[in-house]
Length: 249
Image 1 (spheres, rainbow, N blue to C red):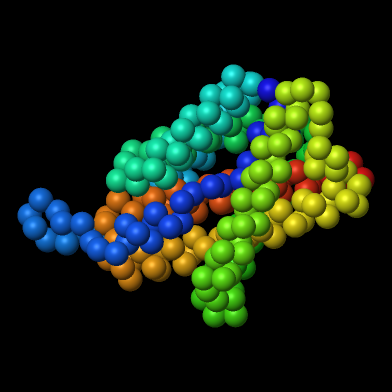
Image 2 (cartoon, rainbow, N blue to C red):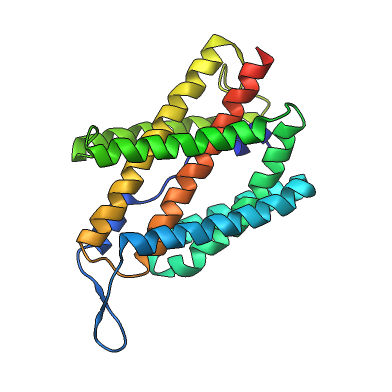
């Protein structure tokens, strides 16, 4: 199974489903509206981060291809379940964080064995990007319009298809040129992918606001938190790849 494919996975969540579900709030058992809030979604995201951090630490101490594969498959299944059935997000999101942490810990250990300090650098760059994009979003310098959203989603989908083609090709002994190689072209491709991942953060922030404004059901806090976590994991892995290539060159 191709290591490079696991190192560069792109989040694909159904944004339209979020908007559709956000048209009305859900009624709780006592008849009162039990709706999503941004603060609630932030709290859920923090919980997911703690879960991911815990399983990542365990996997980092005992890295193995078994944990990598189990983490990837388990995380992917959880994301797909939440995407098609968002009301399961309260369960699917923590499950994703747990499984993804297993994969992330092993991936991190692989890179740490190649380059000292790469984990701290990748984490720092990931959170610096998160804060920077949040400030840009809050300042209004970048507005998430329908055209902007469509453009980012098209770019994201294209990257996903490229990695899917790379994975399928690797099963038959073919590697996509430049995608996982160093050099100026490889570094340039990595920077483009990181830029697209960073733009996905803007979509995640916008989803938080739109879901609250639409009085989306309470479980959408977990769904939005899951979406943000997927983007951050993707961004972190891409920073690991970029730093690794820069170290080789």
